[in-house]
Structures are given as structure tokens and as C-alpha cells.
Length: 308
Image (cartoon, rainbow, N blue to C red; front, side):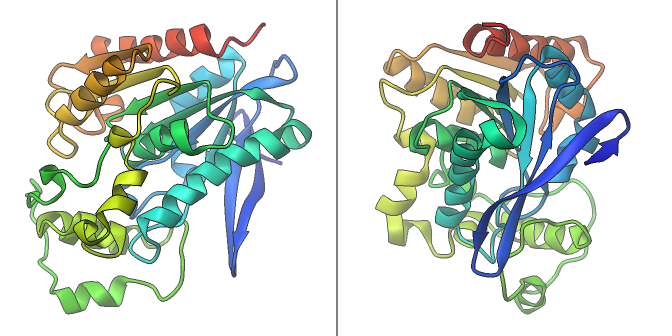
């Protein structure tokens, strides 16, 4: 067991595929009602970068808030694109959710009937995906700056970054892509950022993430996209999104909210006026952002109560 500040962390292998061991960090609340409900926190990074460890650094206030409520928090890695394509990435997220259900009670006193899937950006997509693909669906889903599809026009539109950067050629980008699966951008963050920016800048992000032109496997990719797979038994869902998000359009959460409403799913969309991508860290002291975390806690208390 390691300590991060005053936080105690355990690390487990939740899945092995080939030579790839995929890890998850588990944080237990200091005062817990055992077994305790669990928040599965899934990191973002366009499916290309990021790692399980970012939650305990970039979003430490959220982690501490969840723990103070009495929730156990599980932050997993997953295989990253383009070395691994979207179907396998989605499989990893679902396997993490299923692992909490089957192994969590013994390993870290998890309540297997009380799991929330929470994710940021690409992690929001994966949290929503767990809402219909996990063997035991999470009781509640929370998506922050997330999206529901990778087939829309927004994925093909060249994204122009606001800062100056060196243009790399396709051949140079290919040298940055590994020969085997990776599960973390730790130690290679700049290289992963270069891949992500190249794909977004050239409008080929969906192709890079899916491993092929997604239209060539339209039915398969559509089956992975939450926007097209919400049904009457989808979990209650909270969507939090910045209205000024230029990375992931706010419209993505609007479309999800419309689909949830069409199926009668209890849901709420919390817009952040003037909020861009990553508003919860870039605008952390903004009253609207502070209140949005309060909305998350209230939603979790309703559907994932700690003391019942």
C-alpha cells in the first residue's frame, strides 16, 4: 500500500491480455461503511494518452470529495490507441467494471451492487459504454465533457490547436506508434500528445482510434457508441459539459440528453457557461464549477447512497 499525501492507494492487476498487464489503483475512504459503494473513475485523453494516476494528481479535489462521502474509488488504466483499437479499449473498460463486481468484495470491501461509472472526455464515453455493456450495469453514470459517438462529423473536422507546435509528417508520426499495447502515457506524454494532435489536426482521429475508417466497420463501431445504444434500462445519467468546449462539442451532451429523455431515463445535463474542455481544473474556483461537483455528489447520493 502506498500513500499519496494522506491518501492510501492499493494497486491491482485487473486484467491480463497477452503480455499486457492492465492495472487499477484503488482508494478506500478512511472511514467506510463496509462494504462500500464504488466509483469507477475512467480517465480521458482522446483514447490515446493519459493514465490511471492522473486522477490522484490533476483532480485530487474530486478524489478527496468522493472519499469523504464514503465511496471507494477505482481508477483503471486501459489500452491506448492507436496501438489498440476502440473495440478492445471498450472491452477493457467493461472488464474493469465487471472486475469490481466479481473481485472487489474480497479485494477491497466493495459493494458489488453499488457501482458508479464516472469518466472525463474519452473516459465519459467509456463510462457511458459500461452503462449498457457491463455484465452488471453500473447503478449510475456520470460523464464530464464526454461524448456519445465517434461517427459524427465533429470527429472528422480538423481541430486547430491554439498554441504553436511543430508540424510532423505522417512518417514521423508512425515512428511514435509502438509495436505492442501500452496502457499509460507516463514517460512518453509528449510523444502521445504529438500523435493526438496530429490525428485531430488532420481530421483522422476517429480512423486512428478505430484502427480503420469507422465507416468501413459502421455497424461494429455504432454498437460501441453510447448515443446509439441507450435503451429503457440504461442507468440514471448525469452529464456535465462546458458550453464553450471546442475540443468535444457541447452538442454531444445535448444529443445524449435528448436520447436519454426519449427513453425515459432519469438524467440531468449541467451546462457550464463559458466552460471549455477541462473546465473542472482550468476553472476550478469558478462558483459554477464548484457547484457542478455538488451536483455530481447529489446525483450519486440519490442513486448510490453510502449508508443504506
